Amino acid sequence: MARGVRTYTGTINCKHCGIPYRQRRDAAKTGRGIYCSIKCSNEDRFTPMTADIAVVRKMYCEQDKTLKEIGAILGVGWKRVQRVLVKEGVVFRNGRRRIPGRRSMARYRKIAGAKPGEIVHHLNCVETDDRPENLVVVSRPRHMQLHRQLERISAKLFMAGLISFELQNGYAITPKLSELM
Image: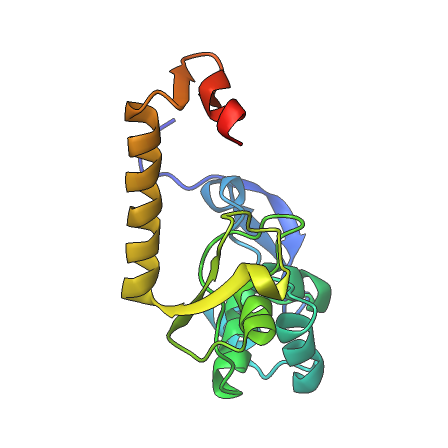
């Protein structure tokens, strides 16, 4: 095939207006090319969302759904959901992927009473242990300091022979430490 020659997969209907058009093969491979024109693309992307803003806010803030999950439910892209939430003044969760069974940072902040800019630290380092006595609110620099202290303590335990390391199993408590416990 000659370079620069456009090839088409066939005729599909535009996602916005429903008019049939020929979809380019290169766009179809990457999941693009679902609109017949740039005008339809822009109209579909930037028209106001028909969902109730309160419902969107509830899904994000209270039900801890991701932007992609909300977009899939409403049949829109995650960026449009994000734009709506920004206009509503919603404070976004951090960008980490959600871990099943783990609560969001917004939920931790509610439990521990943290303000924006503060971090909730798990004293026992188990992120799924949400008991209030296991959570403490600290600043970001203090949080880093606490984790450095834990690393230093674990290094001292290793150097004292209370913790061992094996390539297969990783770190383990030695019998010597088990006796002390």
